[in-house]
Length: 544
Ligand code: NAP
Image 1 (spheres, rainbow, N blue to C red):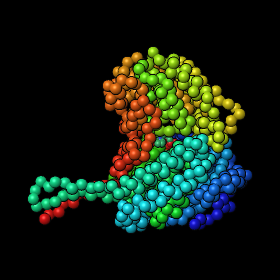
Image 2: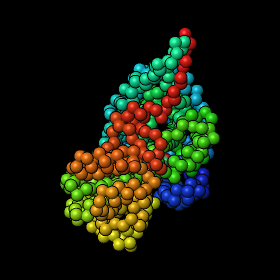
Image 3: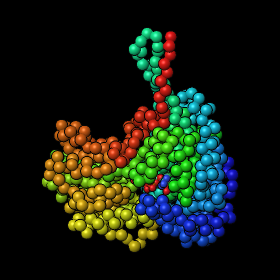
Image 4: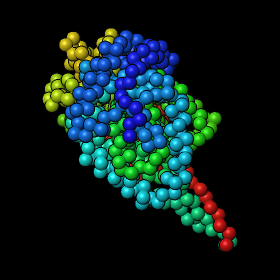
């Protein structure tokens, strides 16, 4: 049930509050978003254009009720915030607003926490089979509505519709997987060292969990967490990225239909109060765990904020993946994998390659073949069937990518293709770019670009390239290509990362443990290990 109409008469308060801006958080991350930049110029015309777009997009869905501009608290969709503020969601392919969402704050977050706390005893005592059935229902509903869910992803995130559909299926796979794993939350019977006692360890849900997700996989990053949390009997308060809240809301509507009981899942939509809400979730004594996917800067902040309440914190953070092509590699296979591992989602995935290291004897051949492939890409709106690569999420992302390319060129890199921006594209586009002759003093060597730029460095020995690849504080994913089996084991074991692709660029799967080492995170998602983040052991000693 929707408690209030969309786009209520809040133009004045919205304009004022949005104009005041959330600059402190932006300064912290050095990553201002286009939405923020545009807010100061908001007018009633701007707001009504968002309303018109919203109505128009809704009418393109088979089930328009999946597109709602509201948070979800205590089993109700809430379309207004207690402050009366709203924030805009943009279509990155056009740079225009498509929806206005309630800009919720601490008050709504606390309501969602209390609702989740109240729901916890009953939910945590449901049987694994009951929770499994609900997750399975939810999985089925996602697949039944996959076309609509994919459109919503493309509208708010920009990725091509085919990729968005892939994300919906990937996202659904976590509900399928955890509906099965729910039934396998085994404890342990421990052989007792004496005859008078029996010992067992059971696994119990953490409690209420706070979930914060990024914009790059608006559907799958939330299902990867929700699936595990609900499977073990936790209740949840989630905060989706302010750029892409609509996918999360659509999922919640399906969750309601799947039979998730009142209070078990809450969703707080916000833009201005993100920082305060994050702090509140971390510091609340009623929240027992935090699961975050996003930038390393924010992950570190959440970890610090969770210290006083000694919370269990699971962090999936930024990466700086190396992709190594040894002299004995199959170059064509390596190029196929490079196209996927570098340019998927226009370079905006955490496991995207950031640095290509190619043996000096094959660097020119690899660079040339990659250039040919990249020049066949079709960049445009994700809704066009011919588009292979969509826009970046916002203006700040384009600026960051541009600055990485300029830095490389200024320091002697050679441009193989791309690098020149078209004036005819109105959204947040950057042309897929390949650079060679990269050096270790360039920004791409150490910073996550998060965009469609492949920078190729050369190397001569295995020892040398391992030193380069590991010379970073990040450690999420790494890839390499070689036909030498001994080398494959050696290098896979030596890369300081949480995930390695050997002769492949596709590593994500719901059945495998996803996560990083060093400053790329703590904990694992998906796989059977995904349940660990939401459970704790209780040891029971029984005298006989
Ligand atoms: P981000 O700025 O850290 O934002 C991620 C989420 O955190 C958003 O919901 C954001 O809310 C929220 N947030 C921002 N500042 C916060 C604060 N002070 N307190 C609490 N929450 C806060 O990251 P992003 O730019 O959206 O995502 C890109 C990053 O995520 C990249 O570094 C990428 O590598 C990483 N990532 C990692 C994985 C993984 O599995 N390891 C997967 C995907 C992405 P607002 O939207 O309201 O600002």
